[in-house]
Length: 354
Image (cartoon, rainbow, N blue to C red; front, side, top):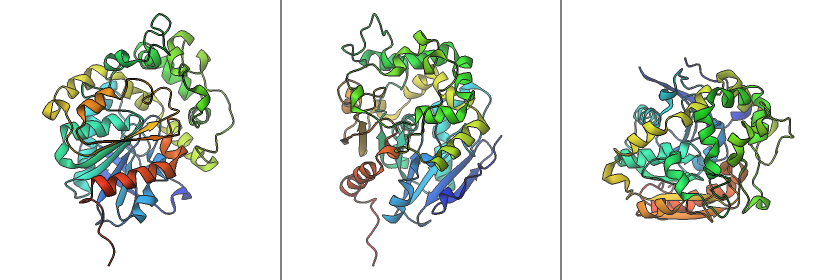
């Protein structure tokens, strides 16, 4: 099923589009001239194209056509009934179909959270469709983004193996072992779920275990209570109107689709094994580290080491933010992206206006 999600007047400066093929429907937000060079922003869990609201008008003003799709399971894009429908290979095909429908051979791709493995997979399987790729928070793992490859990189000074065998990736195993319970906790009150999750980073958590390391021990998210607490909204990440849009989208579609992205470890590993050039990336790559992202902790741990080995043209920038980087620190994110585009992708940078 798919129905274009009714975005509100929140998006006065943006346009809403939809691409329909025989296999999938992708709804998207966009800004900028239709004939400008394309930059596509790919969101993660549990977000919407809305997550790139600070980037779309900025890069449109810089001369790009900036597009942000709702990924499968979200917003106005198709929702599917099986876990396997949310394997990365399908999401990558969705993005290739979007690129084709927009009439382009290539785009600059930018990803965050689960959107990052989508963008990494585009670069490793379809480099000919990429000018370059940039990702926030989730680094590249050529062998595949799955617990099997993440757990050997856990910082055991923060997560002693006896106490935290899976480290901060414990929550991923909870999905695999208790999927219905995980979904039920989020679905119990989507609005409170968004308020509890979408919070800025804090330096006070540095060197301490992420809350995601205790999910199985607690018997579920939110301390095993079965629902998100009613905490105050963090206005440094979302406004009240933005919160309403997130909550409405997640209430409408439910969390089965978003959570199913975590249920495809074996399929995603097999897909990664078919990457071109053994997964080595030769195109320009930008990675933005979240200094206060304690689940995807890449500043002090070894989590970014495989990326540094397998990316031949890598630029790294540390942003003083938590996980929701594009929303919490949009100026820093936009500045880092613009500098990278201008210096590493001069052919892709729009020509000056005459």
